Length: 230
Ligand code: C5P
Image (cartoon, rainbow, N blue to C red):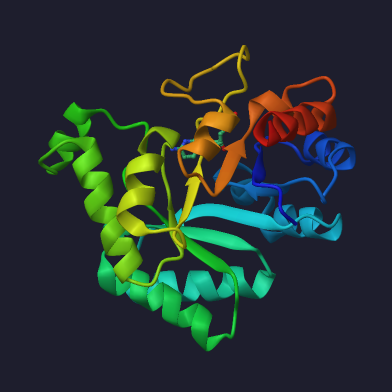
């Protein structure tokens, strides 16, 4: 499967999620299950997607002591998800323990790290106690993630070019905050078009509302794919 699109399946009920999955083609995208659906429906939310043939990114952003995160990652790997994530700010030992737990389980689940949440402003980052610009913190944490065995990071498409240059071609850059030209930005602030995000070095694009909110989700998906190929 060569599609770089990961559709964010964010719903408070199962039915609209099932409807969406019925309309999407698993040969053209993967799906992301996050905290909203997982907290309400548990592993069955991911299993529902996998039964319909979709590879799943389990976006639970683990951040805890190394032993606990290692156990959580092992559980997610046993579920059979394609990708999962942790917070890079959990530190080297936490990330190494997470990776080790997957290796021990002979799992090929991809493990990526969140650097700095893109929702945080410079002031908020300083309030937490980090100095420097958001970009400097993102670069530092991405390097830490890479040297701690992560397969990649979640980042803003605006950071993709810099992180691609700093971390080489094999490091995965998974970018939300993507909007086709002319579509509603919603609560996203620093957006890029899918084509520009790929050009900047993204490996995978997380797209939610431009697809989930479309009258014909599969058409929205195929037109995003066409815009990337152009
Ligand atoms: O609807 P939209 O395309 O904005 O959805 C983007 C998805 O990516 C949502 O599931 C959101 O939680 C997630 N996300 C994000 N920004 C981040 C990390 C994750 O929008 N920095």
